[in-house]
Every structure is written in C-alpha cells, then in structure tokens.
Image (cartoon, rainbow, N blue to C red; front, side, top):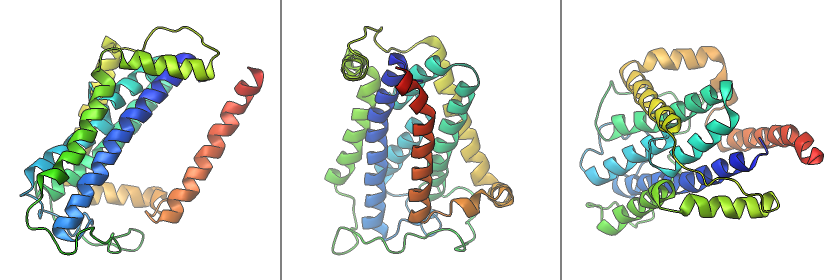
Length: 259
C-alpha cells in the first residue's frame, strides 16, 4: 500500500513470523533427531511422547493463523486496517490456510488423528534426504532442544505484547522509509482481534476437515491443477518466489516513482 501504517504492519508481521517459523523448524529438527524422519506420512502417530514439542508445534500453527497476541496477529491486524475491503478477506483466508497446514500435521503426527495417509510420491517430497544433526537417534529430547523453539515463540509473542515495542518498530520503519513521518503507534483494535480470532478458528476448522476427510481435499487439490504448479520440490519454491517478487515489484513501481 506504500503507506506508513502498511509498512508498520508488514514489519511487525515479519518479526513475528521469523520467531514462529524458526520455532517450527527447530521442532521439526527435534523430530528428525528423535525419529529419523520429517515426513508427515512416516511420522503419523509416532510422536505422541514428546508432549512439549507437540504443544510448541501446535502454538506455531496457531500463531501463523494470526492468534492474538502473537506478533504475526498484530502485524496482520495493522495491515488489514490499512488495506480494508476485499483484501482483508484475502488476509484472513491466507492466514487460515497457512495455519491449517501446520495444525493438520500436528494432529496427525502428535495426536495420531485421522486415517493413515496413503503414500503418493508423484509430486510430493518425502524428506528422506534430511540427515539428523546427532550421530544417532536420541531416545529422549533434551530440555535444551525444547528450550530453543520455546524462546523463539516467546520472542514472537513479545512482538505483539511488549509495551512500546510496536512503537519502536514503527519509528524505525518510518524514519527509514517515510522521511520521519509521524504516525500513531501500531496497536491492537477490537476489529483486529476479531479478525485474528476468525482466521484462527477457520484454520482449526480447515485442519479438522483435512484430517477427517483427506481424500476429499486431496481430490479437490488435484482437480484444481495447483499441485502440478507447486509439487513441493525446491525448484518450485524458487520459481514462485521469483514470480511473486516480480509481481510485487511491478505493482509497487508506479507508487514509488510517483512518490
């Protein structure tokens, strides 16, 4: 949107997202060291014992969906108020789908919910090439391993609740990109909280549907043709990242030149 408020929301979301996504990577690394795999199918129902990891992983999924008061939720709320209208619906839906994917994995891997998925390697990757950091599989998850994602999630939470932090971020962003423009410090609003809770609840519903009716969603996904466009291989991620960056640059260029 090229507005100070929009920039503030994006900056807060990036900071919150960094902590949440890093925590999820750390939890996945624990699964790799404990079970020798990061494949959702292979891990189905096998990780019921490390409960601390399960809680942290589930919280990460909820935070990606926008659960208040995580920094991801605050950044989403601030940006939604800037864009308004139909784009707010897009924010809620994208956040819900993103969080639902992580919650689906948590439900299958940690809670042993739903039917065991049928293996299908035509387009998907199994993660079989991932190597554990430890020399052999660990029998018990050390507290130091669990502490890493816990601290990262706490940092992501602090982005949304630490007094004055959002104002400091806004000040830095506006000083760097808007010539020192003075704007109100980002903060939670009733509408922002409601939309954040809506995306979180929707994420839980989608995750439950994915676990209970996996064939229904898989069939819809295949029929849409999206699976052929994003197979999960690293080349697809790189290609779509470049496409998105180019599109974003094309949309922002007129406003930058006009400014």
